[in-house]
Image (cartoon, rainbow, N blue to C red; front, side, top):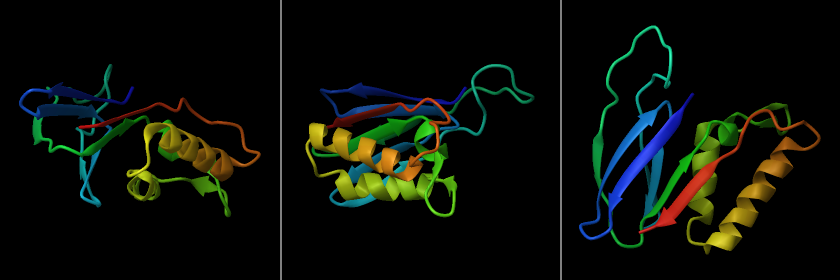
Length: 131
């Protein structure tokens, strides 16, 4: 299982991130940065180490996204292929200035349009917040 976790202190704007195969994406002033998680899943795995806790200093106005691999692994488009992490992150950058209801609708439309008539291949989860 892949997952990302952010612990955020609202009073200090200090945050920590740890990811099992998933990144956290931060959009600040129209620029995107991505902090990678560790390349191992949660659960049984050949190599098990502690997950790396990475400190992130958020700034007011930052848009933060954590999402499951179902957002990037959905097959569709022409030719039929996965959305890919890069394409999905670029899309998040494009819509990051919208309010949350508009972002939700836009992401749903993006994935549904990409998928077309192909069944959904995995769970799709996304957590977003603005600092």
